Length: 138
Image (tube, rainbow, N blue to C red; front, side, top):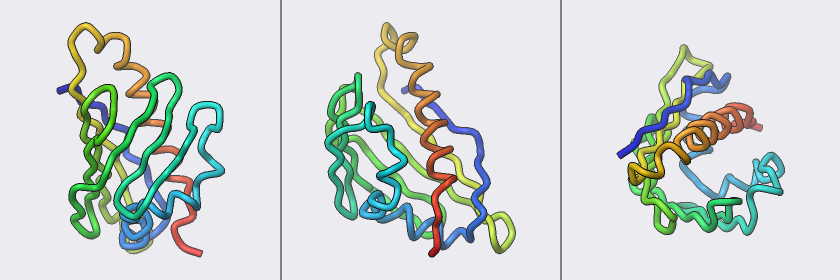
């Protein structure tokens, strides 16, 4: 299993607010306009799962398999060219901020790791940047 982690991002909202937003996939609607339209197509979601068509990877679907309020949300792939697990870790940083890290563990064949390793690392970092910019409270 190959492991890819984002850098730790500080989010200037309390941990509970961040967890409440990220643990319900229906909240993707609030960030839909930030997703690159040329890379992400056919976005479908409900409270526990999300399916997207990502260029050049293809259709990727994942579902939440565990919620540990207010600190961890774990996903697993349902449909993907490569099986993977993905999780969001949240730690309080004082009363009004949260530290977040994203981690992907993917079952990448050795001969593909060199080709997909860098794009996966960059992707997890971009996703963390995007999530850190969300308004978690109105």
